Image (cartoon, rainbow, N blue to C red; front, side, top):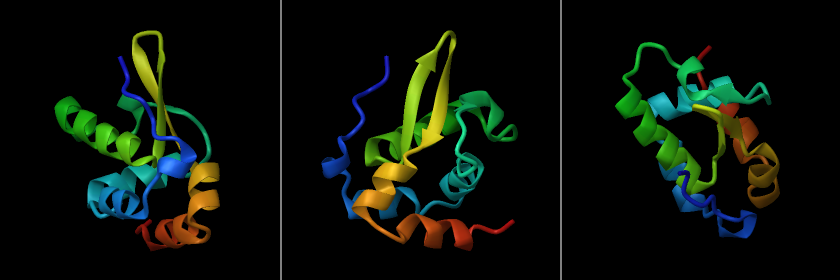
Length: 100
């Protein structure tokens, strides 16, 4: 079962910045920035499932990503529209800072 995602007006800047303050989570955001949905197992192959589960929770609970069940896996996507509405310009600045 997936925990409740925060509503748009409940997304707090300090939680978003804290979530994005980790290099691995920044890499995840870089992958999700293409606008599509990605299965949890398709984003980073070299990281253990338990570690990724922790990072999905931090990103989801802070309001940075959507996570929805689909069969036996979860699909992840970036909450671009919500983040742009709450903090205009933040997401493009963050994405530009992610090394290629």
